[in-house]
Length: 431
Image (tube, rainbow, N blue to C red; front, side, top):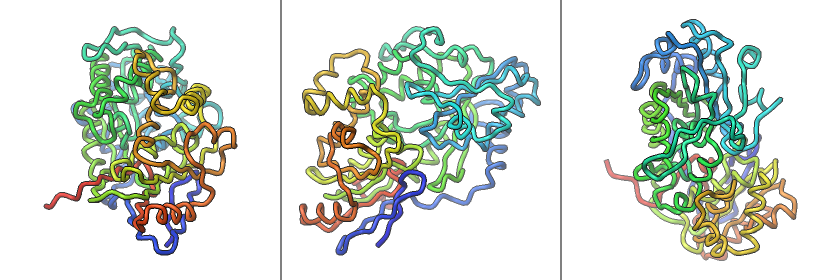
């Protein structure tokens, strides 16, 4: 049996070993959608909790559009130009419209990468596109702290000071914030490093409610909601795509209400009741662009944990074409390997501000507590692999067969889309 895994740009064919009892875990088919242009036009004209886009533009002198960075496959090429043309047609001067890349604490996207991200030469030729830099203090406005958990509210002034504020993004499961998109594009997307590092401190990360597909009591989600409300009127265009990157849903309107509409739609296609746990689980890191670093690969390790038996084996395929990730993340991984998981976690517990990117290492502790992690990749050097803290496998089929033999169990769960699918061990509810 052959299974196509999302892996890099081109995918990876997995040959299941003889005798494997394969349980393929995939999203159900999305309903047939209108053509992308029609979906986007409908979203602008039929918003959630706000006036339509054309009316929102009237009497506005400037606009700032947030887009996600290169780690998210958002179909920007489909909606940026019609959004901008609607703004201009309704009175906002073209020079007063800007696009801000919501990098959080990721590296900037420039040159050919920016062109790929925006996806439309007309937009690049006509609109100012800039990166957010979380470490530049002067770029941010201090709006105080949240009442809930005392998170500093410092946001990019280019967004704060715009008359019309629109966040755009992809709504999918997120292993800490429940779901991506909407309010998350604002914070941490265009937040100051102190805001981001507070979100990612151990008091948030170790909260059991900070998990994929959960918004109830999720401390990150609740603080994000308070932050966007502090800004007054903020709007969002939320998109959902299938495994071929086709647009299957979009919603526009007030940022919280429109985001929840997209969450409601996508939840039924991403949370998959399986009805059991497995001693061998095979997954991906969702392919390009998400699997370009080991930093992002950790998401693929966390999402399937509900179906991994204690002591089981989790096998992850990730391209890692850009290597480990940032120097900050490398330093955190070095500490994990040197100290061990328990001692590493203890170094985090008393911090108000997490060190940059060490939160991803902290999230790796979760699968390490459950079972053995194995990684298939073709692009990490021996020195880089040493600091992953996981086991290397050179052949997926052989690794699966070895796991089956070790556990004495032929059942193997395979999740081709990785963290875009959230398998649940409970059975499906009866209608």
